Amino acid sequence: MLAPASAWAQGGLGYFYMGTGAADLGKYQSALQTSLGDDLQIVGPGIHFGGRGMGSFGNRVFIGGNGFSGTFASGETANGAAEVNLAMGFFNIGVAAVARNRVLFVPFIGIGAGGTGVSLKNENPARSVYFDQTAAVAYERTRKYSNSGFGAEAGVSLQFIVTGKRENPAGLALGLEAGGLLRAPGRWRDSDGNVIRGPERMGFQGAYLRLTIGGGGFSIKNNRRKKQNSDFSFPPSEN
Image (tube, rainbow, N blue to C red):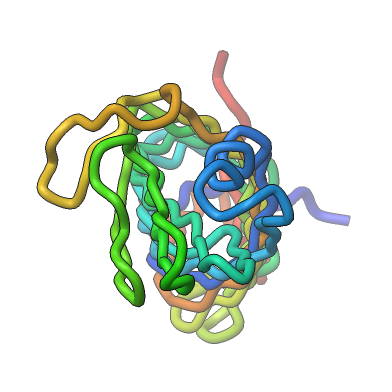
């Protein structure tokens, strides 16, 4: 059997994703139980939406970024309802572990920032609902609060390029992502951006699973023509 041709692939992918996630919401639940009652249980999973773009540089290295927003958990009692939202953005770098036969598998890490939002609604005319210890949430009204900080993520992206020639795969891409998130604690602010005397500073940690759809392509240069059908692959490292 002839040895496969050495190849160099350059290009990139961009895709939209929709996902669900799980998070450590213990501190958020405790703070919201103070507002809405001890029987409040904020539960997930929620749904979030976002997008990612990444391009190949050098031998197997991918650089790009992504951002998303959505709901991670919600709950309600006779006194009102609460929702926990998350929005984050990252700069990412990854290394392709697999890049052949239309399949691209890239473990990656990212650094960035983001914020957690809490939406609190009062549905009890006989009760004053507080989150910031100063301004009550009026009956049938909703108030929003947020905290933000630096963040990090680590995950994997598995993409299948389903159209285009095998020698130069390009077109529609479908795939999956899975990973974890971590955000540093931040001060609580109201919807006007003012620091409030609310619960303690809180961070965020959780995990996600996403479906992706998008497209892109790779231009492959064969250095040795020892095989008629070259796989979508990168050359071995020279190090």
